[in-house]
Amino acid sequence: MIRCSRCGEQKEPITKTAFYSGETASALKAHACPDCWNEWIKMQIMIINEYRLNLMDPKTDEFLNKQVLAFFKLDDGADLASVNYVAPEK
Ligand SMILES: [Zn+2]
Image (cartoon, rainbow, N blue to C red; front, side, top):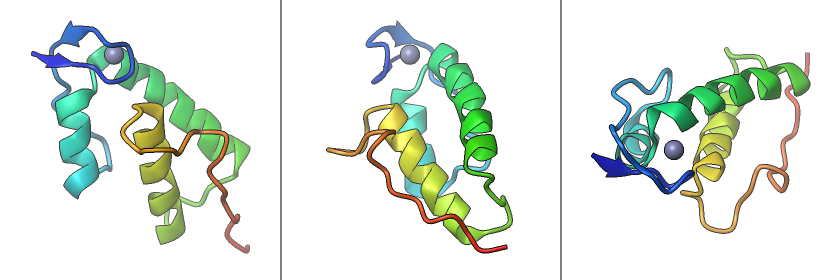
């Protein structure tokens, strides 16, 4: 069991972290519950649409890593609204 850093409840950890890897994946597995994770997946789709993110762009990766950490309050000081993102050129 883990204590989810978003909802604060003790729940089972998530086992899959989609395309997140390395430190981000470790942090998520240690701090994210499945319910909040599902919430994030929906949020992520909204963010991708809103910012018209190109998933092939490494900058998208970096951006989503920051966003997911902010979503789970694992990124000191950052939050979803304050992350600056420069959209990739087409
Ligand atoms: Zn949670």
